Amino acid sequence: MKKTTAQKRLLPVTLLLGLVGLLLRFWLYESGVEKTGLLDGSHPANILSYVLLFLTLGYLIFTAFQFPKTGNGNVPGSNIAALGCMVAAVGLLISNIFDLAQALDTISRICAILGLATGLGMLYLGIQRKKGQPGSLIVFTVVICYFMTHLVGQYRSWSAEPQLQHYLFPLLASVCLMLFAYHRAALDVTGQSFRRYIFLNQAALFFCCMSLNTDNWLFHVSMAIWMATDLHIPQQKQPKRLPIPKNVRFCLEKLTDAGFDAYMVGGCVRDSLLDKTPQDYDLCTNALPEEICEVFQDFQLVKSGEKHGTIGVVIEKEVYEITTFRTEGDYTDSRHPGWVKFVPNIEEDLSRRDFTVNAMAYTPKGGLVDPFEDSRI
Image: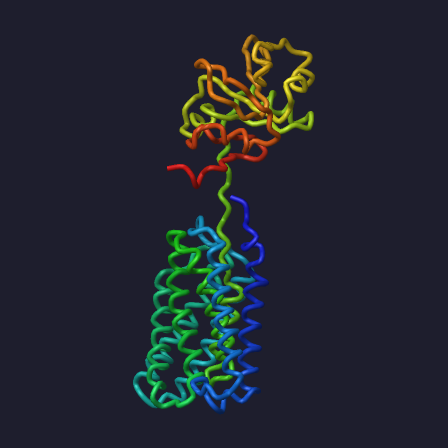
C-alpha cells in the first residue's frame, strides 16, 4: 500500500491548522469580539470568524476522508512522538499542581489529582513511544477520564461566564481530546478508526490553539504540542514474498535486465498466496513478441501462439509461456480470443480478467499488484 498524498502532507497540514487556530484566536481578541462575545452578531468580525471556522472544519473532514478507513498495525515509535508525549506530561503536571494548590471544592481537587495521574501516564506513553511500543489501555482510560472532567468544568462555567468564546473553544477542545484519546487507543489495539483519528487529532489541535488565552493556557499549549507530534501513519503492508522456482525467476530477471516489466500472473499467483504449489506459471511483460524472442534468442522458442502475443521459452525441457500485455475479444474456442491488442501496462492487461484473484500479478521487486482490490466481492 503506497502512501497517499494526504499522508505525506499530514504533518505540515496539522501544523498549519494549529497556526490558523492560533492566529484566529488572537484576531478575535484584537478585533474586539472578546468584549462583545461571539453571540453578539453586531460585530462584523463575527461573520468572518464563523466562515474561517467552518472552512477549517470542512477541510479537516475532507482531509480525514483521504486516508484509508483503518490503520495497519501499531503506531511506530519516533523520537518526535515521544517528545510530544513528554512535553504534554510536563504541561499537565505543572498546570495541575497549580490547580491543586488553588482548588476550592471537591470536583476541582478530583480533576487536579486525576490530571497529575494523567501527567505521569503521559510520561509513560512517551517512554513506550520511544521504544516503538503501543500505549497502555489503562493510561488511555485515565486520559479519557481526565478530559471528561474538563467537560464537567466547562459545563459548570456555562452559567457563570457571559462570554461564549471563553468556554466554547475549551469545551470543543475537551470533546475532541477525549474522543481522540479513545481512537488513539483503538488504533494501538486493533488498527481501526483511522479516519476519525486523523480528524480528531487535527480538530483537537485547532481548538486547543483557539483556547490559548484562557486561564488554563498551559494545558492547551501542552495538548496542542501532543496533537502536532503524536501522529500515526499506518505501517505499510509488507508485500508477501511468494516462492518462485529458479527458472521462472530467471525468465523474470532476464526480461527486467533487458529493460522490460515482467510479472507472474493468474492462477500461479492465486495458488502461491494460498500456500499451494502452482501447476504452471503464466508470465507477462510489456515486451512485444519479437522483443521476447530477442531477449531469449539463445534458447529454444515455441512461437505457435505468437500472433496472440505468447512466446514459449524452453528451459531444461520445460516450456515457460511469456505473453505480452494485451486486451482481447471473445474466445472463439476454449483457448484463443477472436482478436488481441497489445497494451503498455499491467493494469490494462489485468482488466481483461475477472475481478478475482486471477486479476492479480506479482513481481519479485515490486511485490503484489492488485488494482481491483476494491472491486472484489
